[in-house]
Length: 238
Image (cartoon, rainbow, N blue to C red; front, top):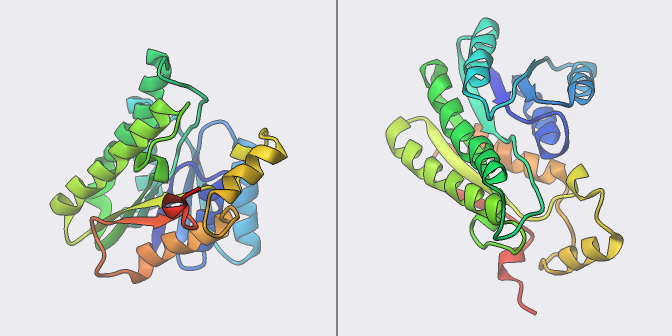
């Protein structure tokens, strides 16, 4: 069994790779973090799993095709595809065209294209999990490009779930997750974000990874859905 996880050298992607490696050989992609990708592969191997790493800038069409070709050299049958690669830039309504293009290229276009490129190699009961965000459902300030592009992810999920059945295609929308993305934020900001969840804390990356594993291997009658794992953030009221 093989699972492909994009953007899996750190954070949520790393946790997903570790979790799925318990049941599958994992193929992880990275763009700039080769040292971290190496560490993930070694950690998986130390626990008896098997992992491959492939470098690719998924915003680029040529690199996406090259990535597909490298994956097919490893396996011609893919059981799980997790489109996790993402970026976050502090922006507002005046977000630059370039940043907006980067957001959509990575979050929306790459998600759709990785699905179509690997479709011929997906097994009959394969599972695709597209990682979005609760901010694709309820936008926040200073994140126009991020929110808009993450909203597009679930539309892609719904379209492909109808076209690819019986292959299952689902969205996972996390709330705040304790990842390196928050490393530069001060303690007060982090505490304020945690306070705005019903559980009063960030998710651990491993908790998100377990939801991905459920969608990948156990949720055989769930497709076209948006699974929210946000600690109750969308329900929080002052």
